[in-house]
Image (cartoon, rainbow, N blue to C red; front, side):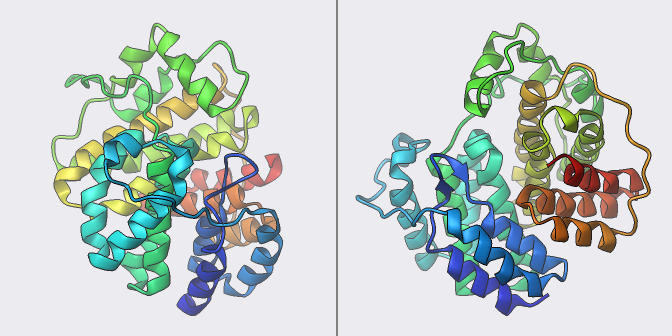
Length: 341
């Protein structure tokens, strides 16, 4: 992995905002981290040359964040949040800032169609595995700022969990669906509160009792969500990617967090995957395709050639799922996404 190329890519991207064309998420920082991670350094700047054309400029802060609770979820203050985390990370170590803000942001995991937490997960992986650099720290700050500006809870996710509930795979299989499947994710998430079975379903999985339980639960959640993509992805190939990539981002962040935060992290990740599934997946899936996906390196190389950011990010996530479980079926999800998107 060429950390110099990643830092160069970050510098180019950090002149752009976290959203464009209204509220579409800037996927550039996430995609380039995945491309460099898997050895496709040489394609990064060429990919960016094309991607940067559609992005907006970095929003500027107008006033300091004084009452952070009041400012959470206010996209008009995106520039203020970006400036806030820039200051925080200049004054404190990145792990300290992450540890302070993770539990504050976690209840709003639906932020930006879950892209807030996903971008944080990529930034934390770069810092953890490749060491700190000014550009990587700046990326974490921009990721946290985006999450804070778009902070959005999953309806009903604050309900008490069931100690005798099922595991996450069983709970995913029992999720209800919204009836009105029009509009974007914000409109769809708002309809969950009107689904009679939702409150019980989102509280269904039994909670993790230990940090190790939480890690196993997240691995199982990512695994099952990836297999579900093969059954449901045709219904909305782009949005259902996030049922996989959001919990993957949480799983990647765990080692940088106090273990006391691992169990609530699983609960939040579950709510995100459950919500995306309930509002985008059809009631009945198709049989999983029988494919021979190839080696993990071949799977990611095909995604890199495809070039779509969602395909790249899903391929990156399924490689993690394969490494954790050994289940070769998950590798097929990246190729399936490439066919659909």
